[in-house]
Length: 92
Image (cartoon, rainbow, N blue to C red; front, side):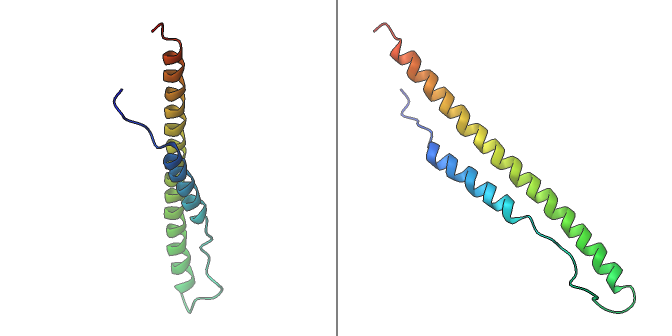
């Protein structure tokens, strides 16, 4: 035995925190009406569209991280269960 043990509750908490962070990135970036004269509306619209695309990419990345952490937890759980099963079946 190596003494190593995965902190499954900690990994689960990290997954939940990442999922909450991804949910918090769901925002609407729209101007609150007329932002000024001339081309200012178009410029602000373009800036907000770029920012919205960046936030969407960030949200997708954080969601993927959360999914990956969940898979890590599931893998450790499966490995622990398999090791316990093999230990119980040992002829010693």
